[in-house]
Image (cartoon, rainbow, N blue to C red):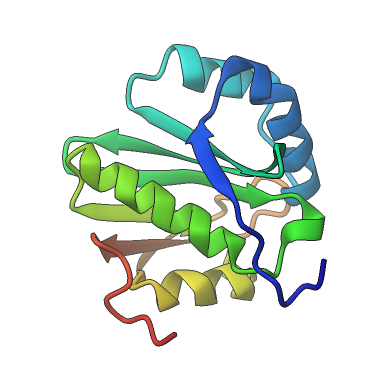
Length: 161
């Protein structure tokens, strides 16, 4: 499949049995990946948590998660397996999360992103996220700060494509 082709994907709620595949994607995507236990806790104990998976031809290729608390959604994770990056699928995960957030009563969305992650920052900005602050030394692997970004829902007010 060419990188220019955006595959036809489906979304569903994450299930307990998805956790090993989600952890494999997490390990591939992040320098400090969440553990299986962290995802188990999110699915079984965190009443604010909503996690989805993205599938292509029956294969789990990505996932996203957030906490919806009152009228705010806090994105915790968005990740894709390497071979599916660069096909606008991160944006598809983000928009699916935003739709779910609105259905759960959120009217704003926030997230943290590494300032050095220009690809993700550009995507977030394209969908209306704006920098609102910094969390100093947020990332434990290298002490990098986190850029705090916020957007109003629905996303995409500034989209140009």
